[in-house]
Image (tube, rainbow, N blue to C red; front, top):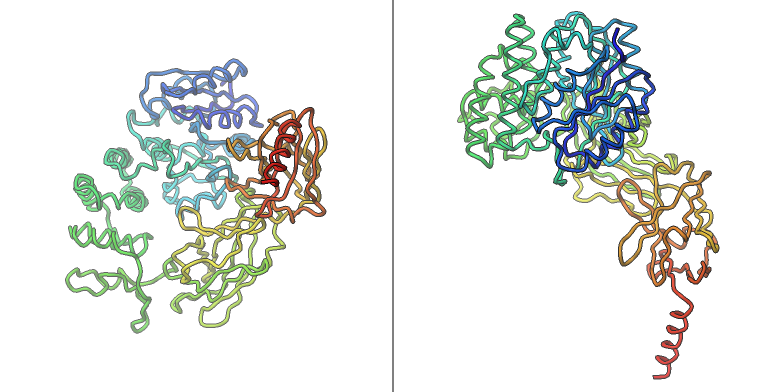
Length: 617
């Protein structure tokens, strides 16, 4: 009888910044009888201090300290000491929702599944986003029981180890461990486990939050180093490792489906061929060998651009491939008889010889979507002339606002069809939640299919967004040139100063999404207000106040800072209070913002004398 229901192996290397949040998400799981195995892969930061703290506090935590050997060895070592009926692995910069393992374990017991798979979301700067990779997303959108992989080969799009629990016996009986020394070792482990599982259950609940770090951070994850030659070699090695055991499994159709499911991933680092001859030669050699093994390779769902990549690689047109990768994927949709084509570079170019069928438009894609203008006027969000080529038989179009605060919070607005696939939309943003951050999507319905696209800069024909940037609304592009909307539609009721504290009274119904701060104008230190209840925030003088300082009243929202305007607070006037021997003035700056000044009685007398002397000159 296993001692624990579930053993969780946590891989730790250089994640001190995120480790507490990760471990807290585990120790507070709603599932009882879980074992937490922390494997420290000789992390050079202070992660070991945090690990020891949690080990001493919680009896169900076991720690392995190993010589630096990589994540694959760390994961395997953790699994080998696990005592749970089921096992799983997670990365120490990620988070598990509180009831995730209870949901997966309960489902495993009810269905007698060897593997239970749940849905992961991305977490960026504290906010959640859906993983919208087209293929992976479809795996998690519907509950399934799989007993024959041929019935649902699409499962191989999901190669993550951390959104699953596995019967420990399945892993050990079939040697489903990660290849030592391999960076992309998760897919070999997961896909081998799929092959040997008698039953796999998929649930639609969010069970894992995968942290995506900012692209400019020095502590980037492995997957963010995609143009590095060693990263590429590991990616190829991982795929070849999987091919070997698929061949042992002796199902040619399943192997072909598996290989096709991996073509898209092979194009993630394709721009690496532009800057390194070594990268280019290795990349093209390996992809040529892999593509030669795939039967009926062009019968896939890659889309137009990537099938052209395949054609150019197979036909060894290296110069043309480099040119095509460098080009903007832009061109008109043209009609020839009863067919439509995307007239990209090389379309009907006899020198290259790519058949017309490669350019034929069969389903809606992002570059075909054009928006004349997006603007906000008097809290009305307006989409003017959303145009889709006539070749796409669109039934309905919706604008979807998806909250990053609560990923399940989505609002849909139907576009008005003005004829000829020309659509428009007006939305009153005053109806939205007082404090929120939304990602903006377009959802198209064609017959029985749904296509979902994040609104991007490439769709817009206008040079600059016509937008309002104030304390209420902010329509902006993310680093990936995707469109998002910040809503800070709240009101101040009062700002109160007394001899103990400064109190802010607002109509915000929670303190979780917004921080009020006083920011020292010289040191840039931020002093955070404490949320009380019913929209009230307080900051006591004793916790921070120094004499001879200037503080600006601000609020933070998802990494952005905003000054608080004097005219946004009803009946607020410049005033003075005293805390012990320090005087505090609240005043209106030249820009109309609220600031505070602290000073002693003596310094006030000196300043007055200086003013008198200055006036007599």
